[in-house]
Length: 187
Image (tube, rainbow, N blue to C red; front, top):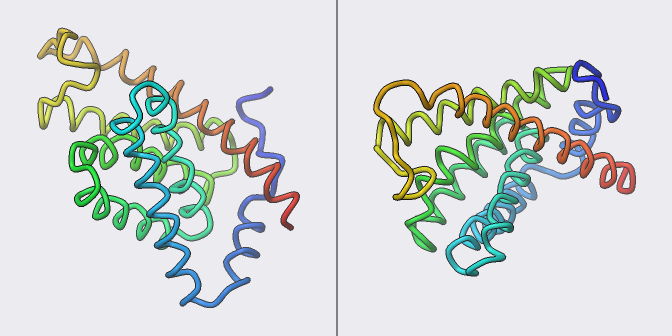
């Protein structure tokens, strides 16, 4: 697998075709439903003891797909999910806003505008890394748990950047796998 390969699915054309299938009012309802599903996936980490930790990261995928279909719909989904999390589980707001949701927005924009896998993953990495740094250094939020020692200098930054790139690349490949299977069946 070459990092600089184009995705095999012509994503921008498929997204434009899907966007024209329904009128705007149908998309508003669909954005609401996807936001509710995303909020439920995000809250699974706190609601279901062990399995929820594996379910919760899946809340990135709906944000990616909606941002790929339309940047505006992706932003609506992201914002509405944050509002729903205020009512459902406020403890997840910071985590979704600055990590899971931002990664979805970054990858969705990457899939929407960029052509090469590496650059798509890099766009997600930039969004995720900036969100993690904001949480860690701006809010002093314990990203890896309260027992993990957080140095105040920048020794942690290269590790966070490499983790963000690896995680973003994994999500890029997972998203391409899902979209290739789903969009080839539907369209």
